[in-house]
Length: 532
Image 1: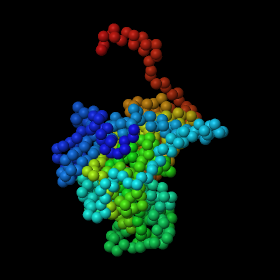
Image 2: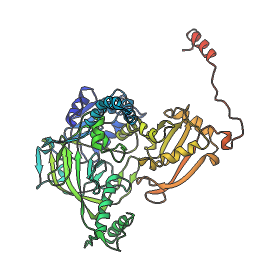
Image 3: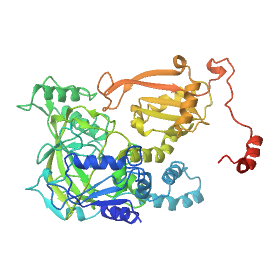
């Protein structure tokens, strides 16, 4: 059965021996990060080597300055916990279900249509359903509430403040009404406002821009007295990047976009907030698919949005279209601080929560950390979706140290000259994969999960001038090396065997391998050799 909420998930972690309760007092300012960082890197030389890789999930029960608060962290921080979260023995089970769904053919004839009915009915069970109320409304505060009451972490010394790091942020497309659930860090400014780190290429940022388009089209522009010139300019730049109406100098659209922020959900929903789902598929449906049971939703109190009924915390509010504020720096998953920049401001209008709520959070930094295992799960589960567009792909590897957007290794069934370069272009056209800084394409007989094998064959197979290509395009907002924010160069390496039809006329040597007869003969006498 699917976990109905965070508490059932915690109980499952404890039964599996994957949870450690910490009863000693800990400080949410830096101290929880240091503890969790050591645990996350367990098993590496010079670290807590007696623990298995990733260490346990941690439930801090005595948080300094927050009497009675509990903080859950590192819940996804190992391969075994990712499988437990999705209730599978292997992540490939989920990709297999996706593959089956993607290969569903249109039925021909009455009999085939009848045979498909049970499958369609089963898929229909994944859609969310709205209920009257739920545990997330056990406590409702429309007045006398404060974000500072939550045990929000300050993660690293140079961070701009405390950050909410594992929120499910819910917005609605102002054109279509479709909901989106994304995960964006939030810097807490004060009791009732926080930064909303909507990078330009994220769905919620597009909702924000759509609201600006609509406001500009309706000529509802207004100036905000007291706004600094630099921030006003930043809003103007965002408006001018809409591709629609251009605002006059100094003018900014008025209005707001409603937002709900959910903290502490069942693991499938939290995970769904980071997956690269197709744009038309709502994350609530993805979560229902992963957990094989629909998400129950309730209406918010002060905004026109629905939220998971069993969430620990719900923060309701809005962002103004005419307001940006400095957010950051923030110690990010790249292993470096992402720089301060201007982002929208989230204003809280209501907080609802369960009684004795559990605050779920995470930290990012130099890998490996909890997000590494979440990223590897995304890699495995959504490989079938990549193959839907690029069927020649055999396997992919996003090495943890490549922080997922810096390096992708791809093996392909090469069928024609220039095939590797076609695959590079295809990957750069796939949603969030457009940010991939370096793509290495190898032949199908190379194990992309074996970095030693990739290194040996890729570096042997390339002529750098001939086989490396560069292109310009959008890059991740966290890329501090690009020549401009959000725009820079990317590199593709064709490490496949070169063909005569690609202009390579020299003989291509065979890989050194012992013949099977000799290997079998040595196998038989191995014990008698007395070497081991």
